[in-house]
Length: 488
Image (cartoon, rainbow, N blue to C red):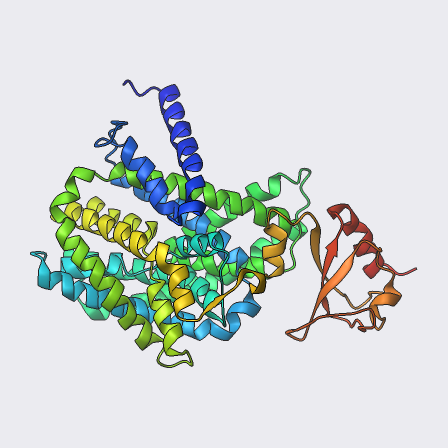
């Protein structure tokens, strides 16, 4: 086939459509979307029925970085600070100490069972050391399962913050192999600088994004998502050029944006949810095209052994040690260990050795690919059963739903607005029933001094209160703002 512009567009759109339609089987079978999209790409690839020859690690890596950036931003916007605050240090421990121990133990095992050098084995361990929570929660949602305690926010925080550590380890070990790095002592200050710069710049960019969207009045509301798309990539690239960790910066910026009072917040969150799904489909199908299934068979035995070690030894070792400083029960640690699914991130990181041209790069890539497939195939379908056996699952009717869950669900037709009572608000000092809210609206939550209050008509409002108000439709927002901020 001659690859004209029209042919490329047709093939790309057909692959996207095939991936989306195939995803309908995910909820019924419990198979994560990752496997379905990868499968579509592999079937369309050079060894599949499609026969599309695609062997560009550089293009795959570029698409992967763009996709991961937007996926991290979307996940960060959905992360609410009050929910992760109780587990923030546990999450940091999992995403640093846990990732390091997982990487080192798996690398040592791979060195023992293969002909790879010590550095190549450690590189493989670093590549697959981060988890993918997107597949986890797609399965949990499909089975209508909630989780007791703070397990879910901890897993969300870990999944969003452990990619930077895995990326740093991968780059550092690759530097030793290519002789660009000469000493371990060189990478320790580099790690501290990358994380500090990434965290600080991420917060600053997050505040700048909120200020920009709130202050800049565009003629068309549809341009705000475009502006935010640009700001996300600017955040990653500027921080990366400043020698910081761009992935961490994007995640911190997203949390900052998601927890701020910002105009057009609801529409932007829904927009980025769609963008994240598009990025996942594109990335997974591209990764599927890049792999050569025939080359998986020679490494299948080694990769299967490495996957079993990762699932049953390396991941639990990292989790149990990282959480030994915190009050988590044995059952909770066991379940968190089992929620160690590897996703597209390791496969994207595995393109780094390919681009660097190291000798065993394709072998490492296909072992990583096989490990990811094995991890997802074994762990994902059994997550609901594991939660039930360990007594950590909540029945569907008791599953706790946040306002974000309600607002973004298909069954929720109302609008939700969040508003802060300013110093000159006429509502200050009044009871809710005295304010005169529209009969079709409902104040569902009042946040005061970092505490959440379930209000009733006699709840007295105070300056600085953040009100979460449910409306019949979004057209009432202007009337509510005028009611609370403009006196008569």
